[in-house]
Amino acid sequence: MSKKVIARIKGGIGNQLFCYAAARRLAAASNAELVIDDITGFVWDRQYRRRYMLDNFHIAARKATPAERLEPFARCRRRGLKLLSRIKPFTHRSYQEQEGMDFDERLLALKVNGTLYLDGYWQSEGYFKDVEELIREDLRIIPPTDAQNLRVAEEISASAAVALHVRWFSAPGAGATHNISADYYRRAISLVEEKVKSPKYFLFSDAPAAALEKIALPEGRVTCVSHNQGVEAVCADLWLMTQCRHFIIANSTFSWWGAWLAGGADKNVIAPGVSLNGLSAWGFGGLIPKNWTTLDV
Image (cartoon, rainbow, N blue to C red; front, side):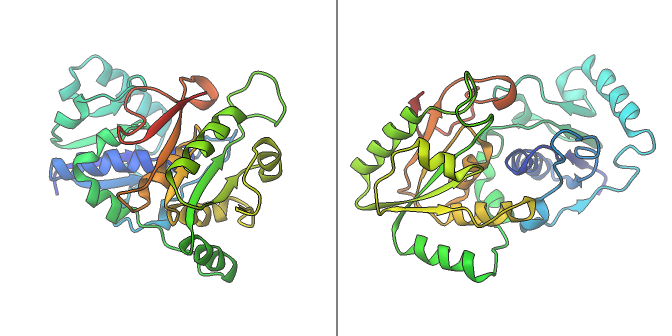
């Protein structure tokens, strides 16, 4: 195939899914081959040490060759392509680097001719809403097979399950941080209690003990999902989250995708309505789907 989109995948699993979904739609709309660069977005990530995690999904696209990753001297060659592309009109660029965080509708009208590098997080369902079923098919998570995860999945399926995610961007109890307030969770739980009959809450958090202390959850109706530890188990938690019927998400693309990938037309999704930059970028244009409920924090 003479036309191809080379998607540079980077960030944590939530951002990796956004990178993929936007590139998948762009390639499909242009009848171009999708190629996955699973290396260059991680090789220099010395701070977070993230790694490519999309092999846990039903993605058929092939991986980029060294030449397609611009090797050797990939960083220098990529920088040169970026600089050259910035002086060209949007539709004539061979390297499309995201400009700002807001939804950029120009990407939807773009047609690929030749080889196009796509580099950005593209955090909006607007980039792939028109091929939603295609994305959902690709992003079916390969489920865990161990007894503990299957037991929790059975518990979820037997209840009006609400996935509640608490993400800690700084230590619990710290001063001004990007951690979402306990008041947001209190109001979100109250809203769920109004809308859902006998909800049961499944708490997902990178610091579950602190989350339980922070949030007043209904006694006897809470399961703390804390057994999946380490990078390898992240997709197991995401899979469990998608089995739930309703969602109270954090300012996190991880729980954004947990809610989005879950089935059920009648699901309730509550998201924090807050604008943040820096450590926890959130609240920019296009991030929250129109049928989700946002609460001020």
